[in-house]
Structures are given as structure tokens and as C-alpha cells.
Picture 1 (cartoon, rainbow, N blue to C red):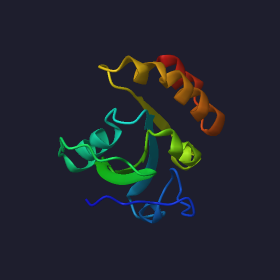
Picture 2: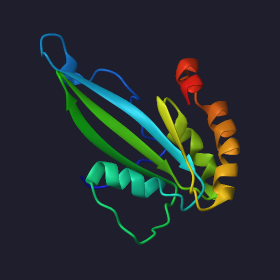
Picture 3: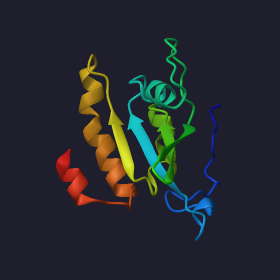
Picture 4: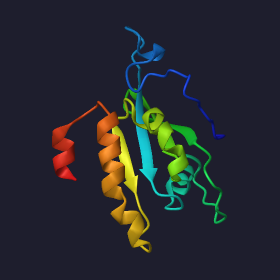
Amino acid sequence: MEEKREDARVERPARGVGPAGAPGSGRNNVVVKVGMVGDAQVGKTSLMVKYVEGKFDEDYIHTLGVNFMEKTIALRNTEITFSIWDLGGHREFISMLPLVCNDAVAILFMFDLSRKATLTSIKEWYRQVRSINKVRDDTAEEMC
């Protein structure tokens, strides 16, 4: 699957039943929006590409703004499409955080174990995401 980039003007359902989920079709389509945030060079894009395309590129490529990829899996009579949004970790892209977080049902807070500062900054990333993301499940939060 080739990488797709979206801009702030695109409106896309975060989750729900798509056209194939119409009554009588016997098949449901569900879109699950997942946001990825964290400092620059912690591996957000690498993880996304590895999951979606199954490959890993050792060369670092700076994320400009937001990357977007999708992966669809079949589970029983449901097709689940993971809509994965990856925010560039440089502070200049923080204004795009709502694009990544709005309506996301999961947010991955990523850091690099070899760089303590990237772990320390997770607290600030979390604070900013919580101020934006309106999809909230206290049970899931307590499990983390």
C-alpha cells in the first residue's frame, strides 16, 4: 500500500460502519482512527510503515506535518481499517495535533528508550492530546 497524505480540509469518519455494512450485506466495515505522537526520531513513522507494509527502512526521513496510512484486516464478518495518523515530532507541527487526535479511538505515545528526554516529554504530549481528543474511555486509560 502506498503512503497517503491527508490535509486538514479532509473530513473522514473516525469509526463506524461503511457502505459494505449495509443491511443484508452480511459484512461490516469499521474504521478505527489511531494517532501517533512523540518527539522527533522516536520511530513513529517506522512503526507505522512496518505495520502497514511489513518493511523497515534504516534511513531516517523527517516527517513534514502528518503522515497517513491505512491497513485493513478481516476479522470474522468484519473488515477493520486502521487509519493511522503520524504527527511529525518537531514542535513546528504542533498546530496539526488536532488533525491527528480528533476522534482517534487510540493514541500511541511514543518515545526512544535510549533518549530519556523523549520519555520525559510524554507528559506534555499527553496533556496536549487530552485537551484536544474528545473520545475518552476512562477504563482503557486506567489499564495503561
